[in-house]
Image (cartoon, rainbow, N blue to C red):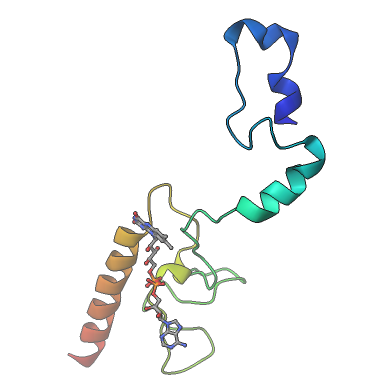
Amino acid sequence: ESREVGRQEALAEWGPVEIYPGPEISDDDLEDYVRRTVITYHHQVGTCKMGIDALSVVSPRNLRVYGLSGLRVADASIMPLVPSGNTNAPTIMIAERAAQFILDEVN
Ligand SMILES: Cc1cc2nc3c(=O)[nH]c(=O)nc-3n(C[C@H](O)[C@H](O)[C@H](O)COP(=O)(O)OP(=O)(O)OC[C@H]3O[C@@H](n4cnc5c(N)ncnc54)[C@H](O)[C@@H]3O)c2cc1C
């Protein structure tokens, strides 16, 4: 555990100080602290990923949902992997591509 590592004699000269959760939280209360304070990283993606393998839900050619007619998905949920950067701009790019796919089919 991080606390145990931070308290090692070999690190003492570096003067490590515990900031979170802080020394006032006992080891026994760590789980409760985590349950109260944990949050997501706000960049959930990929619940119906785009791709061509067996787990893919959406086609990369036109964003249509496999096996259904008349349904496309165009949002962060189709990202096959979490991108290394933030997700708002890629989501807008997906929307732009979706608009073009639709225009290409009606024109
Ligand atoms: C707190 C926070 C901070 C973030 N900060 C950043 C940042 O700084 N930079 C960045 O790039 N990304 C950031 N993101 C991520 C970014 O906001 C998302 O990746 C992006 O908005 C995803 O777009 P989306 O269209 O997939 O989903 P959303 O933006 O969540 O859009 C989904 C829409 O569907 C609507 N909806 C849901 N259910 C229904 C229903 N049944 N019927 C009709 N409408 C429905 C919702 O109301 C919503 O408008 C942040 C996210 C959060 C939560």
